[in-house]
Image (cartoon, rainbow, N blue to C red):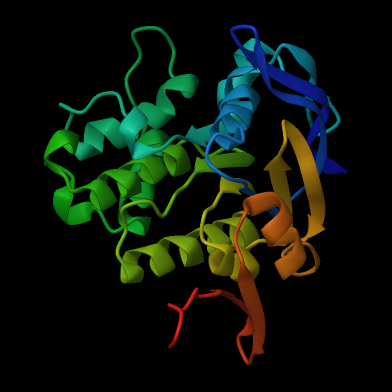
Amino acid sequence: MSRLELRSMGIRRGSRWILENVHLAVPSGSWLGIVGVNGAGKSSLLEAVATGTHERGEVLLDGGPISRSARSRAIAYAPQSAALHGMDLPVGDFVALGRLPYLRVLGGLKAHDRRAVDRAIERTDLTHLADRPVGALSGGERQRAVLAQALAQETRLLLLDEPTTGLDLHHAATLLDLLDDVRTDDGVTVVSVLHDLDAALQYTEEIAVLAHGGLAAHGPTAEVLQPDAVREHLGAEVERHETSQGPLIVPRRRRPTGR
C-alpha cells in the first residue's frame, strides 16, 4: 500500500494555478525526491500536503483521508530554514515543539517525549548546542535544528524542503545518511525537495520532476534523471557518467571560443 497518495492535486496562489492535476503514489518506507526549477511549485506541494491547503484533489495517507486533528501526528514537515519560527528559543525547547501534537492542554512533556527530543538532538549532532538560541546558530545548524524538530515528532511521513541547504559537505552527507537510516530502520517514508541531482541519485528511490505547472516526470530516479530529461525539464546541459558508486551527473561546461 502507498503511504502517501496524491490524486488530481491542484494548488493555486491568488488567480494563478501553480500546479494542476498532480498524481503521485509514494510506497511505504520509500524515499521520493522532488526536483524542478525555481518557481516550479516544489515547496508549495510539500506545504499543501503538510497543511491541507490544496484547492483541488485529495491527499491520502495509508489509503484514507487525513483528518485535521490527525495530520500533525501523521506528518512531520521541515520547511526551509528561512521559514523558521521560534528563533529566540533554545535549541532544546525548539526541538521539543515537535512533541506538541501529543500534549494535552496545559500538560508538560512526559518521559517518552523527553526521550524523543533527546534522541532527535543527538542524531542531528546538536547536543552541544542544546542551550543556545536558535537565532544564534549558523544557517547549517538551524537546518539541523529544523530536522531535529521533525524527527522528534515521530511520524510515519517526513516532508523535507531542501534539507541540505546551508550545510557543509560533511554535515550534508551525514544528514542524508541519517535520513536513510530513519527510513530503513524506523520505516519512515521520506519526501524531500532536492537541488543536488547527485544526492537524489544516491539516496532517493523515485523522483518526481515538476515543470510547466504539473508533474512532468515520475519514476525510478536512475531512469528519470537522464541528460535529455534534465535538459527538457530543468533547463540544464549535463553529462551522466557511470561510476563504481553509481551514476554521476556533471554540468556540461561552455568553454570560451578558442579554448
